[in-house]
Length: 373
Image (cartoon, rainbow, N blue to C red; front, side, top):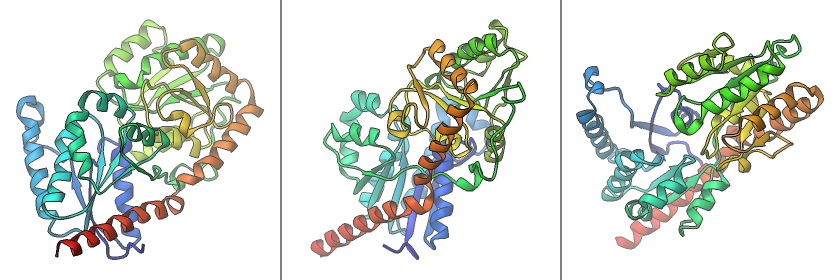
């Protein structure tokens, strides 16, 4: 279908913080508008007003939820379809599910764009509550074969529409990879938030092993989160305080600069789907060492586009990092293969899949309305 003039209600989080789904929501809105679609953004994480409300856990959810529901309700009078960026846990119950029900009440088709590596565990615990809402979605799109399988084993068909990477921001041709390793100062990065599921502690322990072999190595943890203080304390206990940088929250340009300075990227997560950070590293020409969890093996090929290691195994992680730093030819071949593989996530290669889903949903919705009339 041609999207020009199509009125889309895009529901999801927006930066800050610059998380994977927030960045994807903002980027998708920009790209759809570039196709002359009319996009109304319905933000699920609007700043609290007044700001002090955000410090009161008991009531802050209501101050965010009520304006969100109102925006959904009235936007349904203006849009032709809803595209909902959905995730597991309370994010589903508070934001995705209400969007589905409001869309159905108002007679507008709704597409669920489900993300997140914790979907399988979430469905095991909460599918009784999730299933009725899913049945009322007109289509479910997922970014990976991993989530396709998660939904498939529960009887739901999905369409795969990959995550989108802006290659102009992360392209290695524009931003050549760092030469710090050749200069004797290898720079290793982790670009996940400082949250338990991303297991930055294992990355720190792996780095301590790397540093015994390469004493001048440096590590940057680029992200923010509740484990920040504990991770800084762990770095001190491991004797790494002078070699580890905690950047805190970075904007998109700051994150791109981190990739440009890196020699190896570690993705130490315990659960994952289709991590944008891995795609960004590949697009930057940075070799990747990742845990072999969730959707990661659907995203990269071991020994070809990345090295995969077991979760919570700092020794294996360190060995993989050292193998890349000590073998320039292997690293060059892997980064080239990674650059080639990431091209499929550029907008020109994703747009047709997305617009096909939009077209099918609108056609089926119009047919249903005609039958009702």
